[in-house]
Every structure is written in C-alpha cells, then in structure tokens.
Length: 210
Image (cartoon, rainbow, N blue to C red; front, side, top):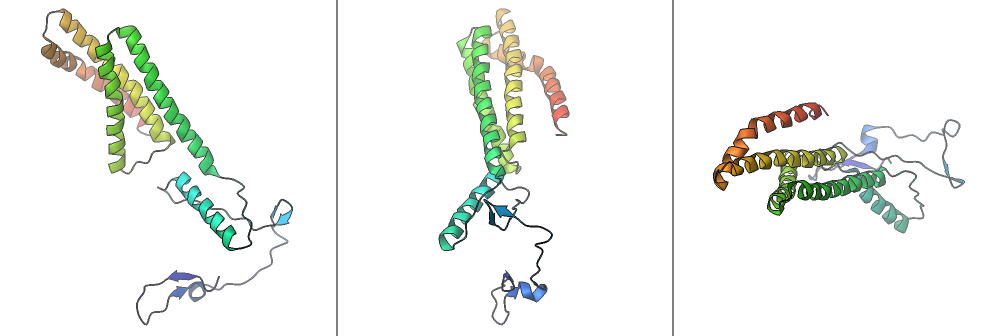
C-alpha cells in the first residue's frame, strides 16, 4: 500500500507521488474488534459506493468484470454479498414495461371511446414523438434515466393523452358546426389551450419539488 501511486504528472525530474509520501501506513491487529467470514473462511469485506451522477448498474457491471479479472490473475476468491445494481435494473425494466403497457392501453381506450381510427392514430403518433423529445431534453440537461425520471415519463404519457382528447373533442365540435378542417384545428386547439396549460402547470407544480 505504501507504493500506491496517487499522482504522476509525467514530467521529467518529478517523481510520482506515492501514498507513503503523504500518509503513514501501519499494520494494526483489530481482530478483537471486528472480523468477517464467508462460507466459514476468513475474509476481507469491501464496500463500494458510486459517485453522484453515475449509473449504479454500469458501476456494478464494471466491478464484476474487475472481480473476474482479479480471480483469473490471482488466487483470490471474490464473493458478492449484495449488489444494488440488480435491483435497480429490475425496477427500471419494470417501469419501462409499465410505460409501454400504459401507452398501449391508452390507445385501445381511445379507439373504444373516440371510434375514429384517424384521431387515435394522431394521438398514438404523438406519444412516442413526445417521449423521444423528452429524452433528448433530458440528455442535454444531464438528467439520467432512473426510477424518478421514468415515472415522470409515464405520468407525462397519461397527461398527453388527456390533453389530446380534450383538443380533439373541441375540434370535432367545431367541425359539426361547419368549420373547415384547418380552421377547426386552429380554433379548436387555441380555444382550450389556456385550460390545458393551466391544468398541466398545476400537475407540474405538484411534482416539481420531487
């Protein structure tokens, strides 16, 4: 451990800074205070924690690969006692599955109640486009795909469908009154635009602190 290199600037005449240069390394016997055994054999227990902003799944995958490398190069036996990456991957997969199922069910309900394939098709296309747009914004604002952000996407899909139904119903009403398709689309959307923005912002205000 004393020979561990902490910093090497790579300049001639400047030796690498080792642990022994900045700290005193001593061997202590703390067997009376703590000990660890795995499968009845003496063991050294290590705990790894990721830095903020990094994916737990990616960190655990890299650690497991490094464990395999250490076992190949040495006689050490590595045993993983707890891996949070597995649980997080399961949660993220479950949320993604719920998003897809929720979007599919929303489309089926739209077909049943609207009874119009064209209107349903428009909303069905808006769902993946909005999700892709949201993910692009998340990428440029350094928001990672995690349990909270994926749950937000699921909530957003539901709100998108709700708002789309309100707009389409208003457009239908204007079409029945004799408006042209283009004018009905413009007037129908602008007529309920304020109400939709207000209802959406109330939800944003509720979830923004989270």
